[in-house]
Image 1: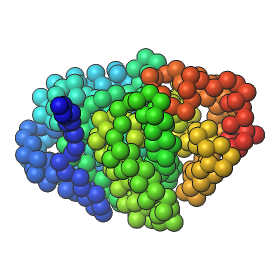
Image 2 (image 1 turned 120 degrees about the vertical axis):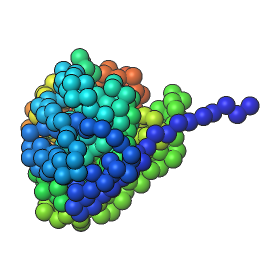
Image 3 (image 1 turned 90 degrees about the vertical axis):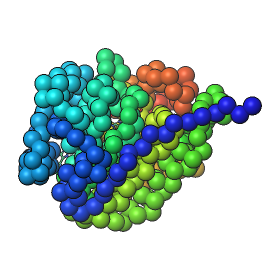
Length: 353
Ligand SMILES: NC(=O)C1=CN([C@@H]2O[C@H](COP(=O)(O)OP(=O)(O)OC[C@H]3O[C@@H](n4cnc5c(N)ncnc54)[C@H](O)[C@@H]3O)[C@@H](O)[C@H]2O)C=CC1
Ligand SMILES: O=C(CO)COP(=O)(O)O
Ligand SMILES: [Zn+2]
């Protein structure tokens, strides 16, 4: 008897392009959202986007409440929940980088309210995903949440963000290659839940990005267009899979461990990119695709070495040898690398000298 079922949650509106930040009020209207919004933002994104969007709401006769968060933490999620209750907010709008959007996503999940995602940086694929990522004790990886009701990604705003945020988004997408390799390996060895549609979408997204790498240049608005579409597509793959598996394998374990060992040293996307070079080597050896991944990263100015990440060699080795423990997710790291093997992969790939 056939007993399978699936429930895929996706945003209802995805609005991407030049000047679309002016359309947030229209998007709210299209969703028939009533009442007062709470904007969840952080200092620079507030000036860049939240303040102009607030002016549009005020012109439409809606008085938004605003909460500014500084760090991604459960205290910040609680502050947002309290602010939403105090303001009697009916829905949330996350405006900023990955952390502001994740905090809005987690708070809205708790409040059982809808939220909109307005990224000000094309820096990660959580913009649209059904995953929330806020450090909880020793845990750094994402957990199940609901996707936004809508995403409004203004390519003008995204292209004016610091260039390294865009290169981080590209690297988060390029890491899909190894995430999918790990997922297929885990399917073969551990018979984990696997979706060929999600895996194919995730891989294709990375391929399209790499094929368009020559359009990804600082100050070029088309870069923001190419990267945001890839981030959306990768986030949708996570929603189809109902897991971050299509976009997160051992390279993400490595990055999450770096976040614990060297907090705030480098951007999420940059860390997973460097992790991906090494895990591609572990999958395919000398003749595998690790050089293609390294070259794709370097062609868009993303870091390919520990020095470029600002992380010392010892920390790279410690992260490689311990990161398999941080989550129950089978990857090419298996039950862990020993120090000699870690030194070999990091040296052979040029990540450390
Ligand atoms: N929920 C999910 O599915 C996923 C979540 N993530 C999470 O996202 C986070 C990484 O996101 P990031 O955006 O890299 O970090 P972030 O949110 O800390 O942003 C980096 C910095 O850029 C600033 N910024 C953002 N837009 C700007 C602009 N237009 N101009 C100037 N500065 C601007 C932010 O204020 C912040 O200081 C990590 O916590 C990661 O775990 C990453 C991928 C997927
Ligand atoms: O960053 C992500 C995908 O790019 C989310 O993955 P995690 O579930 O490992 O946090
Ligand atoms: Zn990621």
